[in-house]
Amino acid sequence: MKNKEQRNYRLETLAIHQGVYKDTAYNSVTTPIYPSSTFAFERLGVNKGYDYTRSGNPTRQALAENLAALEGGTAAWVTCTGMAAFTTIGFLFKTGDHIVTGADIYSGTIRFLTSALAPMGIATAFVNMQDPDAVRKAIRPNTRAILIETPSNPLLNVVDIAAMTAIAREHGLLSIADNTFMSPYLQRPFDLGADIIVHSTTKYLNGHSDVVGGAIIVRDETLAQRLAFLVNALGTACSPFDAWLVLRGVKTLGYRMEAHQRNAMAVARFLAGHPNVSKVYYPGLETHPGHALAKKQMKGFGGMVSFDANLDRVSLDQFFQRLQLFSLAESLGGVESLAEAPWVMSHSSISEEARRASGFSPATVRLSIGIEHPDDLIDDLKAALA
Ligand SMILES: *Cc1c(COP(=O)(O)O)cnc(C)c1O
Image (cartoon, rainbow, N blue to C red):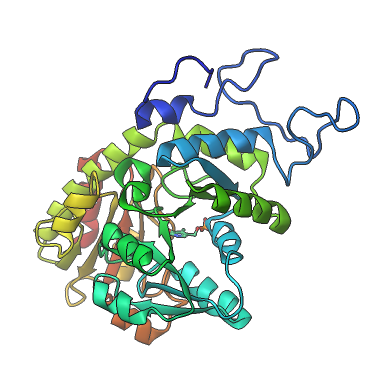
């Protein structure tokens, strides 16, 4: 954004203007892609702010500034995947350290913690984060961080972010919030006390299912310096082209999120009244156990809806085959609607015991509600459930 007078712009405005006007050569109104791997020095010791693209790149920096502004942070790094963001954060810890997180966080994060960090001597306790006492009990003298993800996946359980960050502060721990499911439009972890926000930009921030990426956002200068060092040392930053795609996608974030959640509410209400559906999981429904907390800490209820089909009356295989608008696919957060069976798809890498413990079953279907017309989505589900 041009450095005019400082104003407190709202998210919809920041999404469009923060990190653009970077082109002084031709005054393009969008941020150019700078694919160059290296940048020439004007003379020894003098360059225009960039030297090598792993270390820094103007297109990537534009996206980082944009995302930092949307979350209310002071610095951000954009990585080549959401997991690369977690890889980078993992290097904030050392052998002997311990992390506490939820039992029903994203399955790839569970795999990272148990199969990549644990063999390096960094252990994780997986607890029911809806119960603050369970979190307190899991804290050991060597615990260094609490990792929060809310709402959870696939049952959309809601974790009290302010309560978790208060526990972290009490014990001098870092609090890390994965805000992928809500996006900064619907949930503001910094306002609730978080130290680090992580995103898979693959999902709502990009929103168009055409790039994988991640982001780390902070407010603390010491953390910022360490993360800047790590992203460069590890080489986890994303390509300029991918950064440009996310920068393009994020401009409509607020308006997409409104459409996602309006449609999700309509779909959840439809499913709740359907005889072949035995249970609906959506924080926007008054019957959802996290509804009151969701109302308090989120600006809306998001675009993810899960349900249990009555397997005596519908075959999931037939259901997925009959759907015309919903693709049978993993991932979420794009403009197009997706449907999947977590038991055999997104969550199949988790042990059966852990899957049962988190409360879903082979009958559970997870929907990522897109921004198509809600009546068309409902008609599609109606036909497939018949
Ligand atoms: C998808 C996802 C990730 C991982 O992101 P990738 O871009 O797939 O590496 C992490 N956390 C959550 C909540 C996710 O949905």
